[in-house]
Image 1 (cartoon, one colour):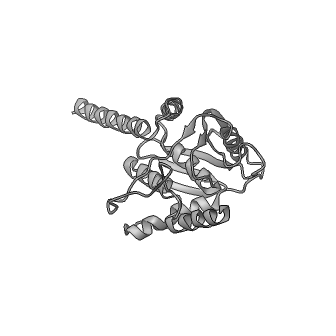
Image 2 (image 1 turned 120 degrees about the vertical axis):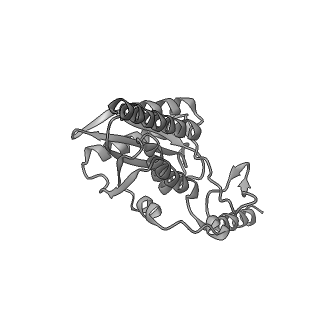
Image 3 (image 1 turned 30 degrees about the vertical axis):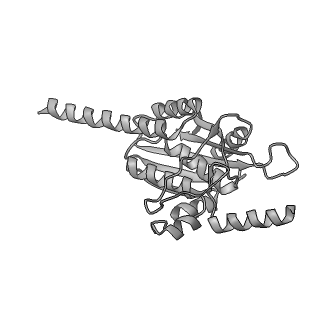
Length: 238
């Protein structure tokens, strides 16, 4: 009987491990970033509770050569210390905004969480928390087009559902001397300089027969606002 129970538990563990690795591999196309995330996941095995400090960075100064570049970073809190061995940093591709960068950091962290863990995200972004706590269950096409940062939000919620994560979001005060938040901030700023980009796959509503694109990129901002900006820009350049 004990041997049967052991085999069943082992089978469940193997299936879970396969799921977690598969989610990373299916989500991340840049091989170096995939390896970094798989390495972090391997280091977190056995944990029932995981605490991530996440941050995003956006270069908003239009005078700089890297204007519009986004960086993301996160670090795991381990035994009241900053565990630099379990951390991540990269650039984030397309549609720059500070909230998108913050959500990108959260998503990349959750990719490394183990199934059925109690997962805590500590972020200084109130906008990111509100975006995730907002009810986005309306499947109407019009609502899908109006949704901001829908690709990352959908990826985060899909990841939590697939892994059965108990996600708890915490708002922390930025630049307050919190060593974990400060480390996540440094990792995000370093990420802006990196050549390896994290791309967010789009999860398309089943109600859509076509997905709007601009210059071969899926439009990930509210469609009406995007069209208004393009029209206004066209008039200005005439």
